[in-house]
Image (tube, rainbow, N blue to C red; front, side):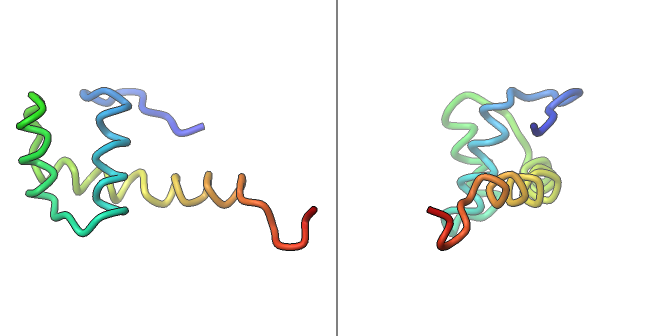
Length: 72
């Protein structure tokens, strides 16, 4: 379980920002603009910190749930 304790922003907003950065070719400033359009005032450096902090944890969680080949 990934902990979001002590964060100023909602867990869903953080996860969406990290997902957009990892899945699409968006810059941190692009994500900052998208979030401003949605009513959230977040700085691009904050999005950078989220990606650096949560991307390795998300990858670990994904690989734990991913099935191994031939594991039927």
